[in-house]
Length: 281
Length: 291
Picture 1: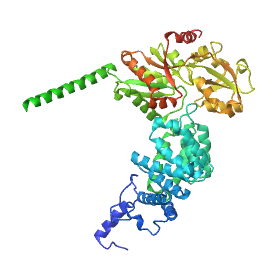
Picture 2 (picture 1 turned 90 degrees about the vertical axis):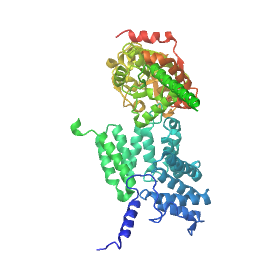
Picture 3 (picture 1 turned 30 degrees about the vertical axis):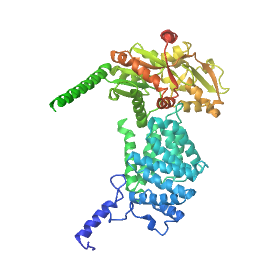
Picture 4 (picture 1 turned 60 degrees about the vertical axis):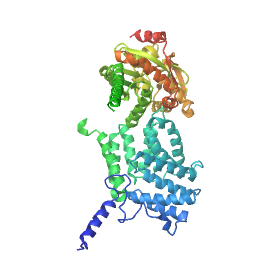
């Protein structure tokens, strides 16, 4: 049986475990204590052998920036992508890497102002990556960031929804990106926007797109969660319950990390509450 | 030293009194109870959390233009008329954004007073349309016994019979009525022949023109007369009377302010207009006549 060599070492390990637990409890960006674990936030990236190689920096950024990664790793990836973008802001792949890393930070950021800051950086990068040239990936990231910004604007966002819709329609040329992301996000937009004639909301289109997302890309829990949401709106509780069961089986920490596992599990529970139980009828 | 302290205390007292008086007047002005903004959208969609946020923002902007304290004003949205009526019954200090049908069917029971017309698409009148699949039916007569859908069917039946259809038909006997909260879906069903007809508002009909593929596949078999587009009304109480002018001014001003204009455009509203007292006489008389 292995034993800790000393009590201070054991304490250090415990502290390290807490810090490296990838923010099990919350989702705000956390700082690591200097000297314990990787210094994602302050490590001088100019010391890297690739510090002047924009392409390599962007590749490492994409490699590190995954949903399951802990907050610090996502932030480090973002720093690398930012550096790469500084070196070469005209390259599509590099701009996409910045938009991608900024999105994964914006999506977990709890402070609204900081979330908007990341999203605006992501929007700018998506534009550079070819949003206007109808690049489906650039438009997907553009839509994701715009969606986050609009979420904070409420009433003033409604007029911008057609712009979001347009970007998502272009992103649909590559529906498989982010495991059915364009289908999922456009479907959700149709579900939550004000309905016709005031808005672009359209539950039939939402059901169609979200059903396709959940069938073609069943690995992503949100495809099932959003589909269940649309089914509940359509009073189809039986199929909604089935979709939530699939989501429950896929929203696991081993694949998505603690933040998304918790977030999606909470979403699933909230939706399950909306499904009338048989003895309620 | 003592004198300056006295002056300071006097000034403080003076400021405090002004504050108290302002607060008292504001509360008195609102009749010492909350003022409600009730939005009634019969058969409309659920608005959820985002809708609540939108109502909150709307009231934030509106109250900025009045002396009303924001905390004294609350907003409520209803897509079910019976729930809206129950709320208004309990909370009579209410301003209501609703349809002509809502006004006519509730003006006596809730002492409703019309305040302004809504201008949308450049018009301050409302007209209703019955649409069918192109070439399927020629007139209202040929639709007898057929399926009619639309969210307008959630409106008061007497209003639909006496005002929209001018007392010529009783819709519950004439059609197989299928109200739906999804009017666009109903229009699609008409074009595929799954249902026979849809009753649309003017705004819905105009907006169909933007969906050319659908618009080209429909015919209009009935157009109602045009009626004033009543949109804004209030329950006549001492409290609502006391703030009526201020609220009206703020609502009208909203469509002129950059911020407010954007808000109103989201709902297709381009302006508000005073209601000439006699302009509703015809609609009132039509509603009251017949059964």
